[in-house]
Length: 272
Ligand code: FES
Image 1 (spheres, rainbow, N blue to C red):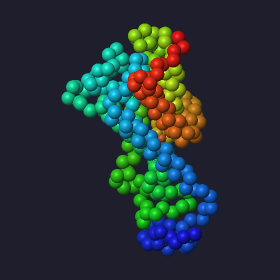
Image 2 (cartoon, helix red, strand yellow):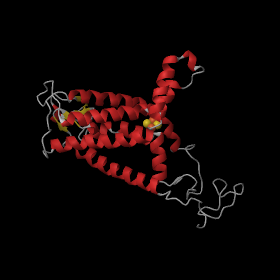
Image 3 (tube, protein in one colour):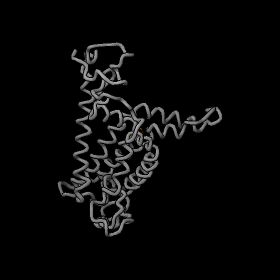
Image 4 (cartoon, rainbow, N blue to C red):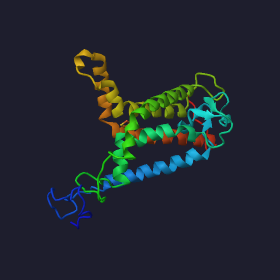
């Protein structure tokens, strides 16, 4: 046991109304392992995705478009003739087209209930773990600006559904070959299929989704369809953390696979 780090203040665990325990915490297990691993994993993803988003290169190799760059909304997505290029933003946009779109999946994950827990613990130590007091003097939770903005999560969920729809479309297009003829299947098709399944599973397992589907009802008996959907989403929701991580890894892998193809590291193995 060590000295408490925050003795003062009118809120928190060291106030007069709480039991005075001199030890900083009473946990004897390696409670720091989970937040440390989480921080390392999130940091690795941030480094990778920042590099890829700003790279503005090697994101398309017909018929595959990197999920970091889709939907590709800028006119400077010109490497993609015949591919999924939406060109809504004019030629004035000179930066990486990924920067136009990544705000949506980024905002969805940043405001996600699971990721909030993960980075509050991993990066801010607020709190570091269950039954371990945080080093900060005061705890205001998410009641004030800026964290009160986390409530925007539901709206990011709506965008996430749209993005998942676009990625589904991209996955369908991977059944074409590099000349855009249908009836192709390569290793990349499997990579994209695995990714889109995980993206949908993560998106549908969202707590906001569960509430949209089954919340604010007085009687489940009067809403049998919503009740059934709510049950299914609940099953996914129990695995939200697992799906958050597996879809994070799969989306990075899908991007990395396209990077390898586009940079000429190897050719996509083809099944038919
Ligand atoms: Fe995690 Fe909505 S709560 S995505």
